[in-house]
Image (tube, rainbow, N blue to C red; front, side, top):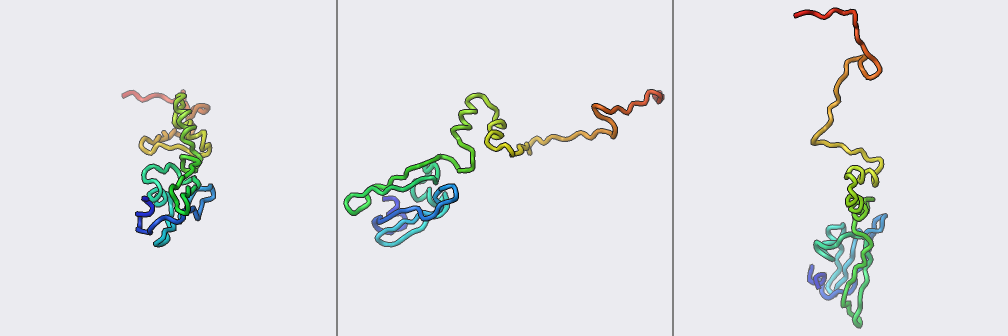
Length: 147
């Protein structure tokens, strides 16, 4: 009913995913009503149309339940709850519950990622030339000046 009232397209005749991303997420949804056809694109547009504030992912398939020749119900079969970027929430939550530091969890899923703290950047101390853990520039023959 929400879809039918959305833009006054009349009774719902068909609803289908017409475009998907390379990972299988819905990119465009076509809504066909007795009074017209609408196209919704992008995850926000699709979510607002189908299930405002509760569509967890655009990785789903559509099942139309018919009663005679009319659509009585639209069922979305979800296949994920994430963004598709490689960071599964359940896995990260499981690691966090084991006490694993968030940096280690992020490194687990994104091993080539460099984590930087822009609020508290580390400042490299400049060392004088020749001074380091293996080189010492000490001159024991030099006299100290008395003040």
